[in-house]
Image 1 (cartoon, rainbow over the protein chains, first blue to last red):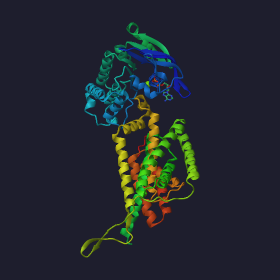
Image 2: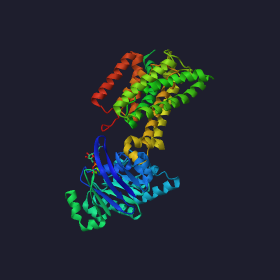
Image 3: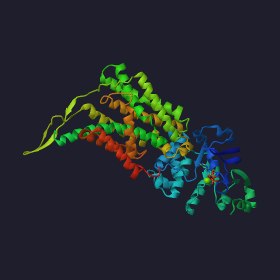
Image 4: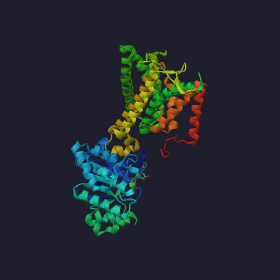
Length: 235
Length: 308
Ligand SMILES: Nc1ncnc2c1ncn2[C@@H]1O[C@H](COP(=O)(O)OP(=O)(O)O)[C@@H](O)[C@H]1O
Ligand SMILES: [Mg+2]
């Protein structure tokens, strides 16, 4: 469903991604791994149109999304859970969700249905609708960031280290959400550093280094040779 | 006149200035808050509001009240559209870079000023207020038989000045409601807080910027329409107004709406009082000194947050 074909991108004169190719399929969890500074976050930003590729193209289905204006990318059905959560800090939980619902551009009935569905999935947010996002606990903030992305009913979900700095119970809750989305048929592209977590849920792993493809693993390769993956990441 | 009534008179003058300043500086603060750019041409949008009000009064006819209402609609709309167009054609092209925006808006300032000079001319021209009855104000006297009201000679204001104070208060409240309650306000605040995440959730940030720049300019134009029946329209009137707006926005804390209002009241009132009792020059000196003190001891302004 998602395909990056020979993407080069960076910030101003600094080139970060070099001829990078990867893909993510519906109903599958694809993990993007690499050391700090390898370009994982930049890859997700490039998909969202926040960083413009200087070469290559990004396809969603048979549409070239790298040609779209950045604000039109989300509307193609891509939910983004950025590193550091990226919440609108001074806005309330309800307002953060409202922004997510706006991106969906559904009619009133659909919007209400999605909102109810998301709040059922994250009951802790339902109790805190009027609370400012920056007063939530770390775990709740991550829930909100995911809930906001789910407001789009995404067919592709991008998650950038969603479990970073969270306690184990929260990590497990987030894992459950990711798996249920996969089961519902969404494509998931997950940036994750913890190898055990990746081995447990990934259908496919792309390892990148210095913004380049280093090695891809499918599920079979992951079970056969997990130590290769560890070696790449230096752990 | 005794001191008490005299002080009240000074405060009324100050309140009129504070009201107009609060409105104008809110526009500047909004633009800075959302877009992180300093609009040096803001004073010219104020001037344009006043000049357009004069043109409307002379072209529409039909009495002062009708032309005032017409000006209050036409001027902010026209100036807002002009500013939004300037945003799309100039600021967007320089990528809203803070430094280059300052230079670009200085250029815009001169273009607007010179075009006004060429069309409207160098004269200061008055615009008739829509209503202007003199209102004598009572003062309390403590006599032998307890407090009693009397009307000291010279303690009066006009219905129009009271209207300006009321109108500014209503407009500022309306902006606040717009920013906190409306869908468009929510989009503007989201853009202000994190423009990248706003983009990632489908918000067309550049269009939001054009709207914010236009809205900020429209507020300045509205302030110009309100002031012109009190102060004549002149092609150079934007300079002082810009300076005072900057003073207010810096003291209040860049981008903080509440701080802007408080600072406008502070500066407007002190300017009114000091001008009446001493001299307008002293009032400006003290305001500027206050800015210097704020910049040294509280650079983020009274209501600003440090991390911006
Ligand atoms: N906004 C930016 N401006 C310039 N360079 C950046 C920016 N963000 C990231 N980089 C650089 O791009 C490289 C990749 O960063 P990033 O994509 O965040 O890596 P990762 O998410 O894999 O840790 C790093 O060398 C980083 O310093
Ligand atoms: Mg990263």
